[in-house]
Length: 266
Image (cartoon, rainbow, N blue to C red):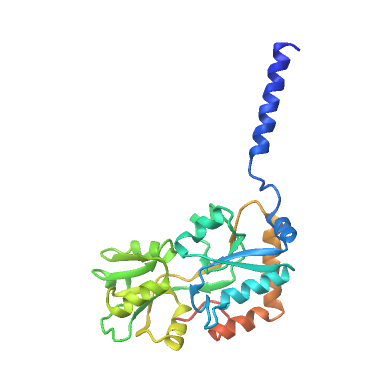
């Protein structure tokens, strides 16, 4: 064999070895989920009423029931993983689970990394204050000199950092900063408007709804890019859940209204 042919053969061998070493993500995520027979779902598990553990230690909440219903439409079993919000997106990027069903805003930055389902929840940022709060805190300007509690890595953290003159304290999740709010270690918290009625009705924390802050935003379900069949399937599942009344039933159970429509601040 000539030197040229040997070189070409060697190059072909290296190319084959390189391709063989690439991650095996060529298959559409839908094929993987169906072959596995389970949809791997990540959520915090500490974010009521969206997802949390009941008195028996079982996962429950709006996101849990929606995720279970989606898995049912895909004809697979739901397989839940709980993790702190601060690392949940990194876990998805690492392939530890298939989707996150945890009120993830489909921001432009996140859309550069992940694919998203059609929006399934529409909400808005809203301040949470102590029950005995008397200061007029209604706009971003009113937050100058105050300390705001937010979840690490959340879009609310990004929003809070953009407020001039405010101090931002970052926490692993909502339970931690709500406790600090109740005890007076921070002045306000910033979170989803849908969280406020639940806090007022179901918890004993001395907090209440503050003013809405910012614009209405959509939350969706992120998953890895390059899976058009999976996106079509999950979007169809959400459409079917709305069409057959399942989505409205779950939504009304937890919020008393259809959360796929713009909210009214509480």
